[in-house]
Length: 481
Image 1 (cartoon, rainbow, N blue to C red):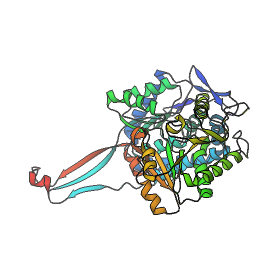
Image 2 (image 1 turned 180 degrees about the horizontal axis):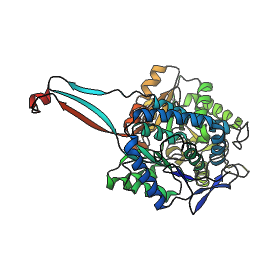
Image 3 (image 1 turned 90 degrees about the horizontal axis):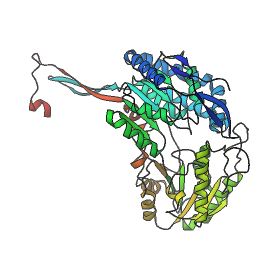
Image 4 (image 1 turned 90 degrees about the vertical axis):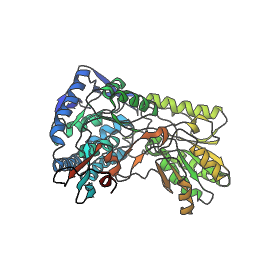
C-alpha cells in the first residue's frame, strides 16, 4: 500500500507520527496512517469554518459537487474496494458495493427536493420556515462500513450547507483517507477535511470549540461519552449506536424460506452490522426445522480472505472484537447452549471465527442479551406471541427488528409492537437513502437518511415578513388566527 495522508484545507497533510493498520485476514500490519496532532486538528476545523462562509451561500454548487463526488467514487471503485478489503476484511465484491452505495447516497441528496415551508401568507404577514446549516460538523465513523456510514453523514451535511471534519475508525482509516485525496479536486478547499488517529482524536473533536454538531456512529458506551463531551458547549448531536435486533418467526412461517433469509440478514458483513439480526425467536412447533435450515446455511458458507473470489464471509475486523465473540460463544456453551455448527475460532492466521448457530439457549444468556457483532446467532424458542414481543422489547436496545410469517398483515401488526427505529416484515436490512434510520432507547439519538436525516444537519429559522405599513400588526388575534 502507498503512503496515506490527511486532507486539511484541500491539501495533503502528513504527520510526524503514524500508527499501523492490520489486515484482519492475517493479523499483520500492512500500512500506516497519520496520527493527527491537536494543532493539525485545529487547522482542519479552522479550514472548515472558513470554507463554510461561502459554501452555505450556493445551493447549486453544493448539489453539483455532490454529483461530482459520486462520479469520482464510481470512477475509483476498484482502487477503493481493494483498500477497503485489505483493512476491513470483507469480500472484494461487497467492498465494491460499499463504494457504489456511497456514490448513490451522494446522488440521492444532490437531487433531494427541499421545498419551501410557508405557514402564513395573508394580508398581515408572510411567514416561512427555513432550514439553516448548523455550521461545522465533526463526524466520527466506525470500522464495519467505513465508507457507507461516512457518506450517510457527508452527503446530507454538505447539501445542507455545512462543512465537515471527518475521522474514520483507527481500525479502518485508509479508504476514508484515500477518498479525501480523491475528492480534493472536486470540492472547494476546507469543505471536507479528513483526519486520522486513535480514540483520543475523537475526544478532541467532540470537545473542540469550533464544531456546532457531532455526528457519531459506534458503540453505546462511546456514544454516551460523545454526548457527555458535547453537552457543555450544547453541540447538536446525532448518535447511531448499537443494536440487538430480534427476528420473530410466527407459527405460519415457512421454515425453509425464513432460515435462508434470516441467515443472510444475521451474517451479512460477517455479522458486523449494527442492524443485523442478532437473536431469533422461533415457535416451538417450528424450532427444529428453522434450526436445521440455519445450521445448513452456516455449515455451507465459504469463509476466507476477502480477496478470494469464492469467499462469502471474511474475518472479524479486529482483535478486540474477535476476542469478544469468542468470549460470548464460550459463555453460552458453558451455560448449557449447544452449537449445531461452529462454536470456535478457525485454526488459521487472522481473526476468523466459524459461523455459529446456538440452540437450547434462553434470555438471560449474555449472547442473547448483548450485542455480539459477529458470526454467531442464538435461536430461542417461544410459546406465546405476546410474551415473545415483551421479551424482544425488554432491553436497552431499540435499533430495528423483524417479524416473519405468511400472513403479512398479522406479521405487520406484531412488527408495529416492536420498540425500535425500523420494523421490517418478511425482510431485514432493507436500507435505502430515502428511508429514515435511527434507534429508540440506547440505540441512538436522531436519525439518518431521507429528508429527516437532512434536517438533522440544520437549524430551524422562522422568517416572518410583516405586510403592515407600520410594522405593528402583532396582536393576540393575529397570533391565533
